Figure 1 (spheres, helix red, strand yellow):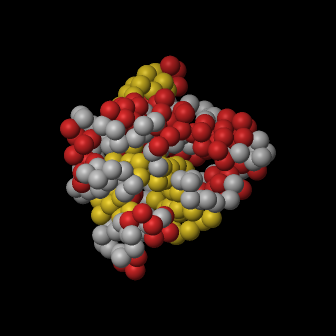
Figure 2: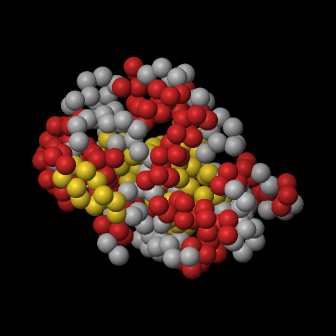
Figure 3: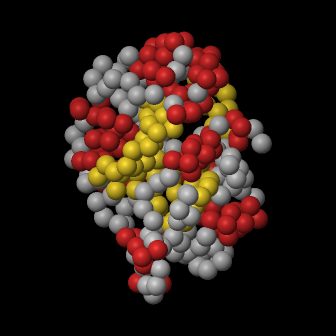
Length: 294
């Protein structure tokens, strides 16, 4: 079931994010991979809204059922977000990162707009799902949980929280997937090298806090593309361009205690695990107007 659900998520994500096909094609042309399946997916990420019946506590039930384990918590005070990451049941599966908007930290007006939509969800929708029915879960993750928002409500939310606006329109659509770099061929297996490759191929990178986001221990380095502006149909068939999803890149370095191990013996457990709030904070901005307006 997990394979089915992940496949469905990636299929729709690729349809909505033009950069995915472009990056994969560039990697194949450069002989970094032979087929798309050669890409190691470091993690996928979802955005949620913290209201009764929804948020992390609801969405995580799907992945906990499939064997994922909740790990570290993260807070993003300035963006009014909380998050957890989830370790997969086997190393061939991606990690999962789920963030949640602290709705109660927003203005009364923003809370009112959000409530006007989310109040349509009367019970936790995951509680009504057969989690052993892959097609049903796949359909749920790509279905509307509330009515289509108006452009006016979207703009009002975006003025206060671009994250809130993104979720009110996109719901549980996959926010990004992450290409793992450390096992790619030399000269492409670091964020610095891969960023150069991407920019030479014409891709635009998120430069909030610098194009390379690096953890204080220097063991987790990340970068991301800037989300493309895509046509979105709001209530009343009102069409406007908004930020879609994006692609992230991660380099997980070998932990100090394994530094002397032969390279061909290094596996996932020998590398830096988890996430870094400072990195993630900047990567969230890949859908923000400060980046997409460039």
